[in-house]
Length: 372
Image (cartoon, rainbow, N blue to C red; front, side, top):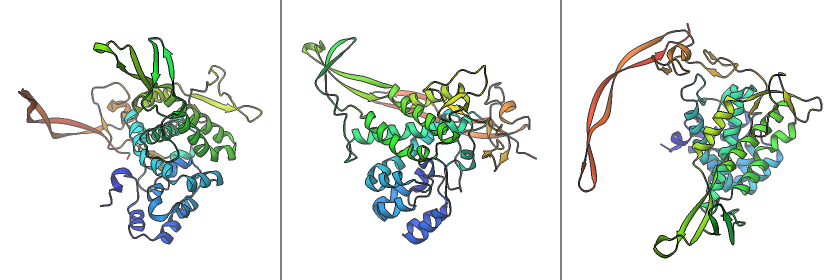
């Protein structure tokens, strides 16, 4: 077991074989067969950047399908940054799946395709808008963390946070290690946006807008954290630093933006957007935008990238989107009884442990019927 199935559960097994056998020629032939016109961040189905040290940045960067020259240049120049981006993918994918866990579209990744989300990315729907925003935010978050933790040679803590400053509580001294979000934003913009800036069509403008909204979301939730110094905890002196909030806050924010996403059309100059309908507001820089309506995601459809809801667990008593009526699209559901083990009758024992019993419970699980 190479451990890749944990970080890249969508990695085709035959790709693992190429890497384990260290057959660079065979490996590069495979990835060249699967060009992708989507964002470079979303072509990481193959753990290319994880193997920079083994295969070398020149070989890997030159053979990643879909990269433009600017991206290949940055890839070769900053191999450790690419590795960090690849390793951080599981975090933003996990956040995406958490946000949509109770919806027909649940941010599922494809098992055997050349990009993470398959043909879904060929559409210009609001789900794709969210994917671009959360992945762009994930790149910023991952890089800023890696910089602060000293994992990269090209960056460290935010060097501008020096000397003294003040907030509503009074003056303080900068100290500790402030997350260098501005550097992460600049690199993310240079690398992720490079392909879209070369295309400059309606879809490229949509991607650029949503990429930026994702980056701004991370910066939005920077918080000032402080440590007090002084006699008897008087806090006469404060040492403070800027830190990113938990990525869940970014995910929650982008999920709300998804709910209020604006359908747009390109203006007559081809440089920006107008609302697609007269009763829609013009999108702000923080809004997510999309060009076309979404499929209903009820049935498996390869062309639209829909995985369908057959076999999905639903809530029989809910009237929301997680309810069987909505989730199963009127096809009905099957009920099965399963045994679940939970911790119960927990007691605190001095000192300092909690002891619980394993309790077994029979529960009904409802799953959507498949299409007929």
